Image 1 (cartoon, one colour):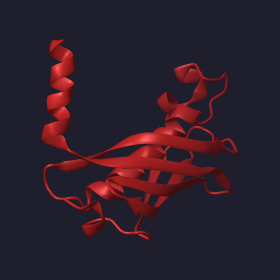
Image 2 (cartoon, helix red, strand yellow):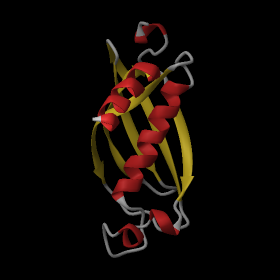
Image 3 (cartoon, rainbow, N blue to C red):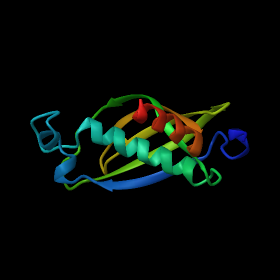
Length: 134
C-alpha cells in the first residue's frame, strides 16, 4: 500500500475537547493547578491526528505516533473547550508529518509538529505478540 494514495499534504481535521478534572495538571500530578495538563494537550493532538488519518486509510491499516514536538503556550482552565487542528504537511513513504495546534476560546495554547507512521495492523500485532511471548 502507498500511503500517498490515501493521505496528501493539506488534509486537515479539527476536534474539540472539554477540559475535565481528570485532564488537569493537579489530577495527573504534572503540576499543582486545575488547568489542562500538557500530557493531555498532547493526547488531544495525537487523537485528532490519528482520527484524520484513520478516516482515510483502508481497513487493516492505522497509524502510530512516533514523534511529538510541541510547545504548551498558555493555560486552559477546567471546564474550557479546547479545539485542536491537525494538518498534513508532507508524506514520506509510510511517514506522515503534521502541524498541530490547540486553541481555547481566547488564544493559541499549544502548537508543534507530530509524525505518525502508517502501519499494517496485522503485521504490527505479530511483532507485539512476539515480544509478549518472549
